[in-house]
Image 1 (cartoon, one colour):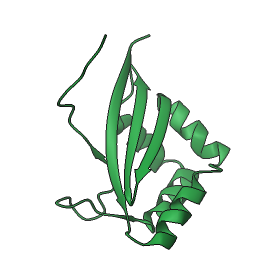
Image 2: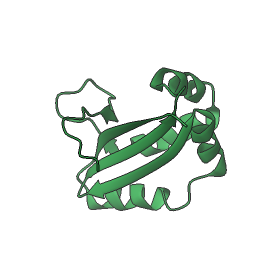
Image 3: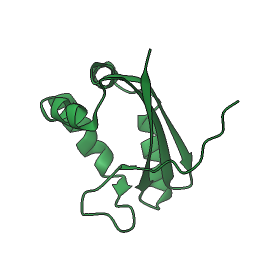
Image 4: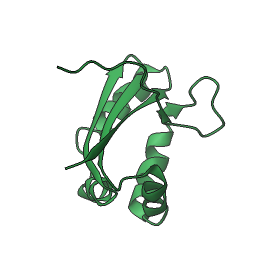
Length: 113
């Protein structure tokens, strides 16, 4: 199966309460949110944290696109509620437009055996 891998970054507010609240939210993600991720063509998603910086590794199927996911998310009230809720803990990455949360990184090196 052909897949696509993306690495995204996001900053949380540099406040311990916001960081811990964000982490807690991800310990029990609602089934409707998980289903919305799956329907968008995401096969695997992991989020890692270092201090207030988040890194997401997203593996999508061959048809996955961020545009498709955005359209699905816009029409899903539960996802909109989730995103609004999480938004209170997130902040803009340096140099990004207002309300910019997750930014796609550029792969600059890869090693494979």
